[in-house]
Structures are given as C-alpha cells and as structure tokens.
Length: 252
Image (cartoon, rainbow, N blue to C red; front, side):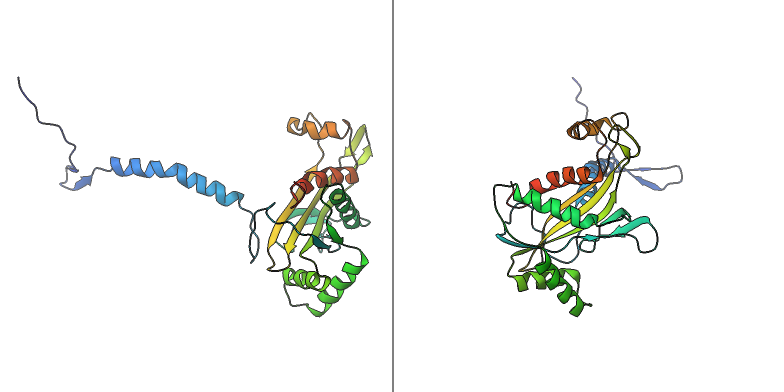
C-alpha cells in the first residue's frame, strides 16, 4: 500500500514573470470575518445619542425630588418660515416650522399635567418664579453656555434637576376630523439636566405628522387611539407627551 505525503498549500506561487504572488485566502477569510463586527460598530455609532460636553447617564437611573421647569421655548428658523434648526442643548438637527400663538406654553402645560398623572409626586417649581430667575441669569450670563445657565437657575431655586423643553413644529391641521387638506404635525424635545454636574440624564423626543392608514399601516395603533379621525395639533402633542413621559425618571 502506497502512502502519499500530505498535501500542503504553498505559501506563495510564481507567476510567468518570476514574481512571487502571496496566497491570501487566509487573510481574506480573516478580513471577511471582521465585516459583521464593523457593521455592528457602525450601527451602534449611528444610534448613539450625541450631546455636548457633559456626563451621559442612562435614563431611569436617576430620580429627583425637586425639579425646576424652565419655560419651554419655540425654536424656529431665523429668516424663513421653515427649515432646519439645532437643539440649544444637544445640537440635534430638526425640521422646524414657525407657528403662530404660543405652542411652547401649551406643550409645557401638557407636560406638567402628564407628570402629575404619575404615582410619584415630584416637587415641581414652575411658572413665573422660574421664568424670572431664568431671565435674570440669562441676562447677566450672555457668554455662558446654556447648560451652565440652567445649572445656575437650578442652584438658585434649590432644585436637583432642571427641565428644559423646545417646540420645533406645531402645525395645525387644515380641515375637520373626518377630512383634511393638511394633517397636524408636531415636533418637540424635552431635557432633564442634573444640577450638580450638568449631566443630561433624560431626553424625550417626539416628531410626527399624522398620516392615514393607507399612507402608513405601521401607525395604525396611533390612528385608532385618535378615534380613527384626524386630530388637532394639541391632541397630537398630548399623545406624544404621554409616550415620552413614560420614560421620565421616576415615572416607571
């Protein structure tokens, strides 16, 4: 019986010109094995919430007993009626539309009502008292970052946390509950800042334009929560606040 020597792959082969061509199959296999890891890293990087200098704290891990609520603000493009704006705190880019009236005051009021519905009762400081302190601190601290202004406001009021909210879009529907020319559209963002170190410990974000079932079946639950009708901007904002407040620290 003949015993043949074990076949081995050469580490390199010669081409017709006498040049060495390295065998790279093992290298390619190793490279391909890294692709899933690279894709995963890209996905994680894309999903990370970016914020400016500060300490990121997982939501739900911090609960404050005394919270100051700075008057919500409407953030809109300076020159045009609509366009892209940045969140004053975290830099998030959002499509914004200038709205008439004071939608920021309405969203703030709805937010406070949602907090009041929870089992945990927070020591909330809101209204003109907070507004007066915020105006004064902002006026004497024109070159200080907004995050530090909020910390100073919270410290003066003896609060552990400060809530700051921004309304980017509050477009009313054109039409009635059963037929519209243009549906309601609402976008807002709310931050909770820890006074002791300026960390943004919670963020609530909502951006939605109501669509019909034919346009988006994935939003069927939302459509039926509205009674299967076209809702107003206030009703859409209330639905959004009900969703985001569920993750507010202490509401779980």
